[in-house]
Image 1 (cartoon, rainbow, N blue to C red):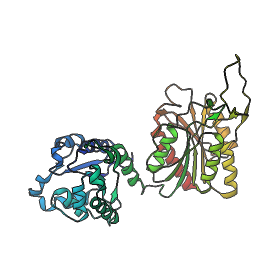
Image 2 (image 1 turned 180 degrees about the horizontal axis):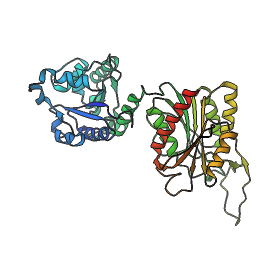
Image 3 (image 1 turned 90 degrees about the vertical axis):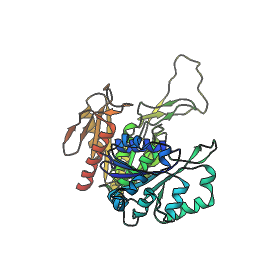
Image 4 (image 1 turned 120 degrees about the vertical axis):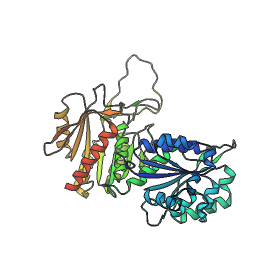
Length: 410
């Protein structure tokens, strides 16, 4: 379940070449569990067939032809009042001008006028798409400002190649990015609204010289999945991440670090005002005692590197909590290869954690780099809960629900 699941979303499509992106957006929304109704202007049907949208949503597509049916006098009212969100993507300069000044000469703009933005949790959303000169035109910019002042949310446009061959701002935002923003908007009323969560992700990198590092196999997938799950639950999320190619979930505040020392500084500072810390990062236990300022050349058969222990970040956080009472809940991770439960329980007790998530990183079907995980959740009261193999996003939603229970008990 995501914040979009079972939501009724009305998708308006206007006459732009970017209408093909709207088909992908309608498909992604439907796959996310939304109930998607589509309104197309007459111009939009010249670019993409209504049958395309009916095929990906499984629902009737509305066009201006429906204005003259036996339900025409209530159709626009029903569409506007029954949906949880109305998004127009793509929105041409012509449609933006109509909505800004209250014109209602087609079903799409008529429905927009009926969509009362003042009394709704989710306002009207518009994703512009047009050529560079049209978007930068003073009249278009004025119309966009009028809409923003009335509470309409504008998504994009992006910079890139346009149909004219120009490279400029005017491309409709990609459907994945629009979906992420819609997901975020729906999440703001969920159970963890206002709760501040700090999550760490990835494997730290300890430099040996300007070329080489000591690191580990952590991909950051579990930490990033936890960030998405926390955002979905309504929380305000800070993600402290080691280098990763994974996109940061929309709405998450990222802080990028490399070394264990960098992470410690960022975590301690972020936790001063945090309700929850989830320490999912794989932090190096040791770092080179000395870092060479130049690349170490291969002269000898053997090379010895003296190592020193890094600071235990979780212990530092629990010490800080004794002084300032934040964060309220601290969750650790234990990546083990043997004696998983015993080692995790020991870490839970020594570091005064509220919960620890243990997993066997030697398992071939889970752990580092995998999209799946098989974890055991342990709490100080002696509870040991072994979960079956799940996707990391499923594991994350389960953990976030456990965090909610811990906060309520606090």
